[in-house]
Amino acid sequence: MSKISKCLLFILVTTLSACDYKNKYQTENYNMEINMYSQCKVNFNTGVISARISQDSTYLDTIEFSKEERSAIAEAFNKRKIFEFKGEYSYFTGPAIMPPSTIGIKLYTDNKLQGEITVFDNAKINYWYPFGKRYNVIKFRDELKELIESKKEYKMARQVIIENSKGFSI
Image (cartoon, rainbow, N blue to C red; front, side, top):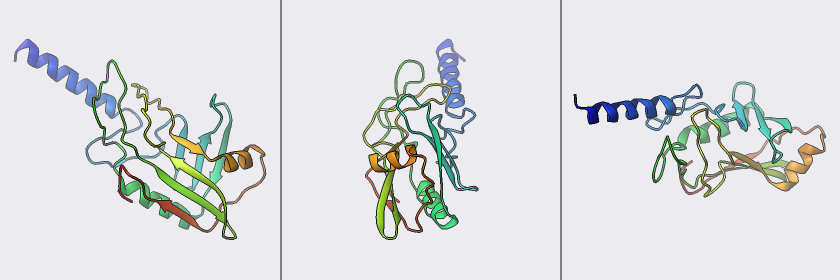
């Protein structure tokens, strides 16, 4: 094996191992866990989303989903291709450019819109690092953010609408 071949093999193995860090990044079969980001952890067994919602990522709160809501959200996540990287993927020197992918979750109580969660912010460049740090992963509309920050007890609605967006199909 030539020196060039060995070098290319080393880079390939290094890149693949980086994509399969402890949080299971996968770019081929799209089977994934949703507990992979420092800013967003989703556990579909307990139905809890933990999200850091302040800009400095110091304020942590949780939102609970019912079993039915959990199933709808999990189904939507399982059907899209979040890790279809577009453009240059550079492990050593630069960002990975994610497709413009958004899942919009609208939250209702008594048929009244209470808030909206957007997962995977639309048309952003998300900087990726070997230790799995990512930005702009989950964002709240202002009304829901204020509701959470007021620390009022808030139960999720029975009705959750998962919206389609360019970048993947739900």
